Length: 237
Image 1 (cartoon, rainbow, N blue to C red):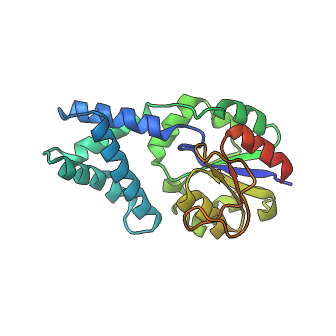
Image 2 (cartoon, rainbow, N blue to C red):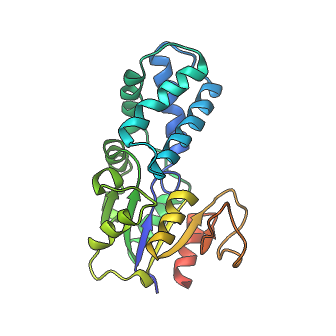
C-alpha cells in the first residue's frame, strides 16, 4: 500500500514546455533578437542537453544557467550578453505557470489519501514562484528542490536527504512519478523505491509491460499517460 508519493514538477504537474517557450521568446525579444519557433526549439534542445550534464555531475548549476545562452547565441550566430539573457529569462520563467491537464484535480484528490512530496531539480527561485502562482503548495507535505537539498536527481544523496525529512518513512510504501527517465526514474531506482513514468504521449497506461521491455536504458515499474491514470494506479499498488 502506497503512503508517500513523490512528484516531479516540470511537465508532470506544471507544463515546463509551455513556460519555457514563452519565456525564451520574450527573452530574445527583449534582447532585440529573432524570437520565433525555430529559436525557441533550438534553445529547448540546448537547455535539455545542459540539464543532462547537471544530472551526470559534468557541470554545476551556476555554469549551465549561463552556458546554455552562450551556446544558443553561438548556434544562432549572434552577439548577445549571456548573463543578461539568463537574468531576463529567469524573470520571465518564474512568472509563467501552465497546468498539465488533470493536475489540479489530481492534487485535490490525491492529497486526501497520500502524503505528497514535490521533488524538483529546477532553480529554487523559479520553482518557488511558479509553485506560488499555481497555488499548489498546500497540497504537499514537503517540497524538495535540489538547489536547497545540495544534491540533484538522480543522485541517491538527493533522495536520502528527502527520506530523512519524511516521518515514519518506508521505501516499500513510496513511489516516484515524473516524466524523466534520467532523473525521476533512474533516481527512484537508485533510491530503492517504486517508479512510475508519466508519459502522456506514450499511448499506453499502467502497469508497465513487463521485465525486459525498456524505454531507453531505464525500466520504470509502471507507466501512465494521464494523472487520472496515476490516481487509479495508486489504488492498486
